[in-house]
Image 1 (cartoon, one colour):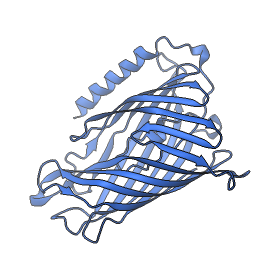
Image 2: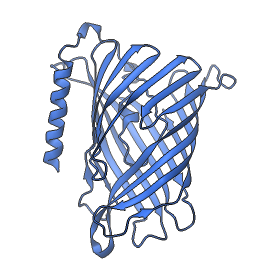
Image 3: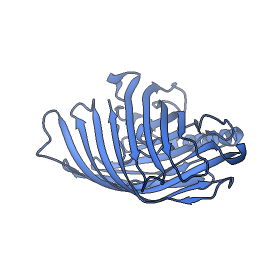
Image 4: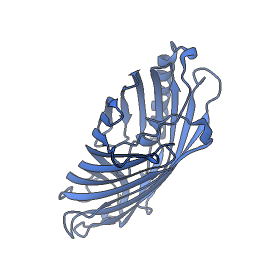
Length: 323
């Protein structure tokens, strides 16, 4: 497993090196940090895009760029359906890259993260009541010129119930490119290797368009949203937004199943949500609250130690803060 991840990382670095060769260093813009949170706090096994994809460095903040905390409560359809309560924390740290090609004028964002998920599932034959995720997201970002930038993100992590170590380590990898033709438009595309048996890899991409200060259109698959600034509530302290979004989420954990066998539990869900967000003027604080309708929920067991389960629809509440 580690050898496969190693080869994949070497391939991604080679692709980035070849792609960055013609870049004009003289056109590299000043670095800043624009932490644009996506419309979702993806359940546990996210791709860490919120800490890396849309991030740039704010030199005044120094090493620690942001501290992110959040939680999600999913009660399930009824008392016997799968219910989940997740809490998560991560810290984004920025480090300048060595001044050697092709790392010149680039930087690293290191994001250690931890999450705990409390599980209530009375109808399951055997399922752990606690799930854990701990990992380190390592993102390399290189502005090529005023319009183009590259990003490579590797996220080795532990995902399991705390009772087994077999098949608990995963290493998703994301490689992407961003094109900013005008200040109003941003186009992103790439591919994410999820290190999951059901969905090994998936392309991502789309665009964000901000025609004025009051509207944002973010068609960034797999998590698009439309946001409107609340001009009446916004003021000198910051802007307040409301938004509609949808998307796809899930997670994979190694668990101790029936007969003391290790299995991979793979959870999937689709979401439609309504959210409210506050962003301070100096971008020192950002928080959001969301209510979501979850559908198409399913739990699969790769080793078939238990039957796969179709789950009922559910509501979910999510809170996030970044400072």
